[in-house]
Image (cartoon, rainbow, N blue to C red; front, top):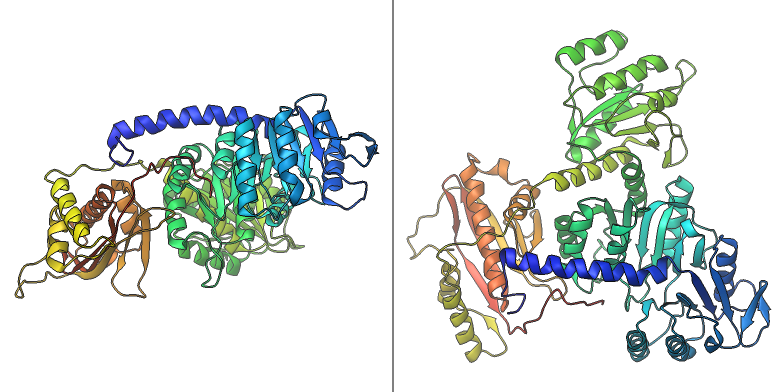
Length: 640
């Protein structure tokens, strides 16, 4: 039985068992990369400023306490370290070898490393062609060595003083795990997180990603007590569905962030944008829209608890800034808290007469630090409040409002906006609330909170299940597909009667005859789109080429289908928008998903328009494209 034929609990049990074995094996093998007791640098030069010499110097000055070897046949010693003439002269099988030799020499060096028992390689050298890459990977597998790279910037584990990179500055130890395919952006991220005070638990630049992948790093961080937050920048996915399963498991206990790059039409994105968005959202990965937003969101998630909801109280001594924060929150799907009852009455006693207590809270420009602190504590005690944005502009007429934020006794997430600070984000010194992220504009604070609140909602939402529809005629549908491909071996579009019959096998009916009455409602579209990297997507939205659309990867769970409907803000537009309307839409999406999983030969389904109204949904037109398909296990290890 193939993975595609398995379903339900049996498939989950199988994949859980496979995942647990791989997780243990991965941790054991990556220990030689990320917790090595001995390191060999191969290719370090006597000339300062070269890549190999910089890596050697960084390891020496970073505080690494393990055994360090240098291989250079043309030098007796470099930086005070005795040089060996050959890899074969290593006195022990090194845990990690960092290779920075010319491209033509890489394969020979890797083979020598394997012969003397080296356990893992980091290949800095770039410029290897496809054949050389294949040979390098084959050598690593033949000798049981893990491989980072080639064409990478190295690895770093600041907690043990290991800086096997050629960065200009040592990373600071901390709690953020970082994996990047872009080495330059990786260095920039390491530097920003270090200067911010979050620091790095471990960093890997993957380069060509022949072996060690983002999946491997996620599994390492899952068992690494030093890592509390993971940051990814991946330009390609060898096995997206496997990534989704691993990320979903990791995200259940640890925030994972990424940047959604390549959103412009001419950007060189390896993976289609909609597929990547669907993959990340379903897996619980928090998606930032840029480098700055990534760092700003990381500052919040690394220092504050995850919000339990989307209701935000806004407190400020600058009314106009509070209004900007409220607008930003509303645009991002956050709810502004409007105090009432006892909370409002108590606020009235704290806020000056010319202030505002109806939300956002305007404490006016002359508020005292004590009054500001008490206001924060009062709002935090309100069960309706899930998070607080505290905006301040220190003046000569106020007390120390930044200290008031630090000293406030609150147990919910707090973000500060300090309007006169030059940094886009910094961490306030630890006090009663620990470290509080402080931004220099309201929009950044609102965005970080929205990303954190979305993650909190995903983490508490039921995972859902893939339903099993009674009456589905999968064998009849397969016979129809086989018959079509016998006549059209290259594939093509089904004739309208064939398309209607195929859909009918899965409980999706089309009106019959020219006089069929169309129900009232709004026009939506449901589309199944194939992706050779990610698999099939169910795309849903309002009808029309420029309308809002969203997508999820198959197989859809009932929770996926509900989120897909909500993500295009469709429900309020439905006449009467009773639960039955959304239930009928959910049913249609799930049936299309089930058809896709049962029949991988179906490459495209285009249902448009679909009339969604109080009485249910009606598919008025359908087009189906069928293509030959070669069955494979989508959970097998693939790297590129």
